[in-house]
Length: 153
Image (cartoon, rainbow, N blue to C red):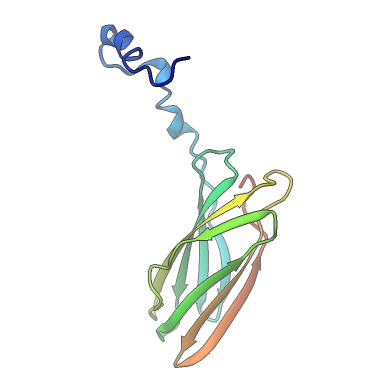
């Protein structure tokens, strides 16, 4: 077990032509991609929040959640923010929103979160989202508890 002994791996490939060996396992990465159903997380006052899910590995503790927030109302919503709270067994990091203005008539904002479930299998994903924004200059707030995440996350 020498560390970083370069060159040892390269030699045996040269006789096999293209270098795509059985033990490279390249194709497995694609087969393991499980797709999860989209979750309709919130649908209130013309605002819809959809969650799509991705995992680097099927049994990873971490789930990438891509939130798409849509506005079917006529008015633009300004100063838009989406805050998320999770119970203690979850850790979450939230990326910045694609915009702080949610345009009217099917405008959309996307935001990505990474949720790590240290008790995956024993405890499910759960979160509360709070949307805050201004509609016509007046502050509004929507809150939703989400506990119907797809199985296996």
